[in-house]
Length: 205
Ligand code: TMP
Image 1 (tube, rainbow, N blue to C red):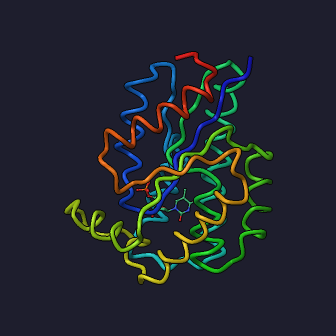
Image 2: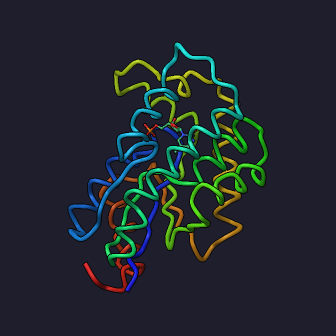
C-alpha cells in the first residue's frame, strides 16, 4: 500500500519545526523532510533563495522553489511513498501558493500550475496548518536570535497576505486541511496534530 503524505504549513515563526519533531517522536514510521531542501540539489537552492545578498525576481523565486520541490519529489518523496513509507513534509506546494501566489502576488492559479508540473500532480493526504497572527509570527521568528533571511525581511503586508491565503486554502479543501491554533501551548498543538495524523495513517504508527 502507498504511504501517506502529510504536510505542515504556516507563516515563519508558527512552530512548524517543533511540531514536526514532536510528530516524529510520536510516529516512528514517519520520514521527515523539509522544503526547500531534503536532497543535495534542493539544499543548494535553499541557500540561494534565502540569501539576502541576491536579487530574485518573483517569477524566478517561484521557479526556484518549484525546482527544489521537483528534485525532492523525484529523488526521495515518490520512492518512499511507493515503498509504503509515510512522509512528513515541513512545507510543500501550499507554501508556494501562499508565499509566491499571494505574498508576491503572482496569482495562486499560476503558481499552482507550475507546481503541478514540478510534482507530477502530487497532493498531500493531510495538511496541518499552524494558524498564527502574522504579527505574532514575526515576533517569534525575531526571537530566535538569527539574522533574518531574504524572505523574513519582507514588510508586514507580505505576511498578512500569506496568512489570509493559507486561511482561504484551508476553507477551500476542508477534507485535506486541519487548522491548528499555533498560539496554544505546544503540547496542546501536538495532541491535536497527533489525532489528525493517526487518522491519516489509518491507526498504523
Ligand atoms: P523555513 O524552512 O525556515 O520555513 O524557510 C523557508 C522559507 O522559504 C520561508 O520563509 C518560507 C519560504 N518558502 C516560500 O516562499 N515558498 C515555498 O514554496 C517554500 C517551500 C518556502
